[in-house]
Image (cartoon, rainbow, N blue to C red; front, side):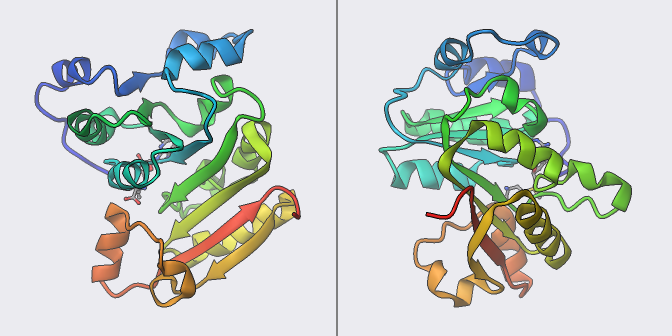
Amino acid sequence: MRMRRKKNLESRVEEVSPYLIHADLSCLDSRITDKDKHFAEMVNFDLSIPLVIELGCGKGKYAIDYATQNPTVNYLAIEKLTNVIIVGAEKAQELELKNLKFLCTGAEYLERFLPDNSVDKIIINFPCPFHKETYHEKRLTDIRFLKLYDKYLKTDGEIALKTDNQRMFAYSIEQLSLYGFVISEVTLDLHNSKYNEDNIVTEYEQRYTEQGLPIYRLIAKKRKQ
Ligand SMILES: C[S@@+](CC[C@H](N)C(=O)[O-])C[C@H]1O[C@@H](n2cnc3c(N)ncnc32)[C@H](O)[C@@H]1O
């Protein structure tokens, strides 16, 4: 997602600090010894309820809608671009949502912060497809990422993926299957399927749907239940 740098970004980031966490990059070079304590202090959530995370949340429309509709889960929305994530954080602050936080960092670093076996669900909506074959490791469903998710996703946890991109969808199915995830609830046209009932539309989804593109969607579980 390309955006011009927003005006007064630094002061806006400061103003939404209760909702926008910036990953402490100093800890990227060293292991965090007590991840549970560090994470609890970082997010300041009631950690007795389920934790859902979203990777590449963009401007956070989906996160806002999900957290509003599901007040009994904690939602951590992750995005690497500050000038994009700020939009969601400002909205969350305006709505005073208690169960939503935005974390500005790359998904590749999350394993440093998230305690093992702590996440109930990982949501990946319209990930960048990184078409060039040499960039496959940047795809959020590449095996490199699945290995990281495996550490913090609970044993009965799941990944929910939506995309408009057929190649990305096929690649994701291949990688998830190779890694041992069990794939279910697959549809090649989400909006005309039985899974559409509780679907929350993302910003990109809205755009692609207006262009007449079908939406691909799947659920991947760590183990057969
Ligand atoms: C195509 S946009 C989709 C935005 C939103 N999920 C939606 O459906 O409207 C993909 C987003 O993922 C972010 N992104 C890509 N790779 C990422 C990574 N490794 N870590 C965090 N965010 C990432 C991009 O900056 C971009 O905002």
